[in-house]
Image (cartoon, rainbow, N blue to C red; front, side, top):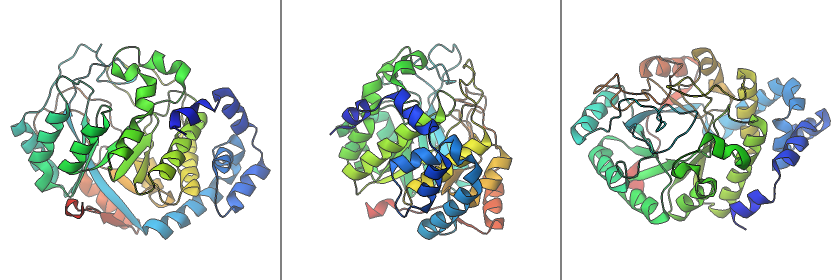
Length: 369
């Protein structure tokens, strides 16, 4: 069964009702289970689980330490371009924002890398808008060629590609690919993506399968928290993760938790996701899946990131810039969104260490592939 077939077997409103109908008994059963299911996940993200948040956090801490130890991986995003052909109502790069666009040259990429390396990073996440005529596979391959000797771990977050294109990137040294569905609510997806290739819901939905077929080491999933009901959207994302793990069992997986942030010309969040709810979601994922990596970016506040370290996350960004050239080349170029935690990599590393955890700058070496 394809994921599209599995997806079509579910009904958004029925899933929503099932989540909101969960009881305290369902939550207690999920907490006591030795091997939790997607049905348990519904209980753990339900309103009925809120009184059990402390217990969920304790279990999340235990399971994370069991699998990952007391470590937090550090990474830095590097935006190569803010060119984009899509209209997305929540993104600062949206095509209809009539602002200055920029794509880094080879020399500018080198200059950005030099600045990033000063702060100790050995894991880089390359990010672009979705503009196939400008930032295409050959562009990515050239950027990877330029930076490969500088980083042990290269991840990318770009437009969905074809399987053979992902294979080329894998051969060039890409370790992981992040692709977010944004929302799994197909009926309203088009309202958030009215123009551009991203408006094709099914093509984006099937992208993780193409990544898996290409043999990429790790696939990153996520939704944009704030677009639709976070509980329902997160169930679909967890179902997607479950499907992929069964089909591409040799692949690693990560989940990110981006909440909508202010940006040029974007809409207000449709749903407000509180810190408490985000914590509940992170813990629910850890209780569902001991193996999945959980990532928190600088979208989140200092206070939240200070407290989340022992509660399930395994990686954090720091000192991030969300505009091409933001580290050294062109600090005034268009941002994708405003970050919240503006502390430097050195400050975050000290925070992690002072919390009794080890900072991991390098957890993979491309020579192993």
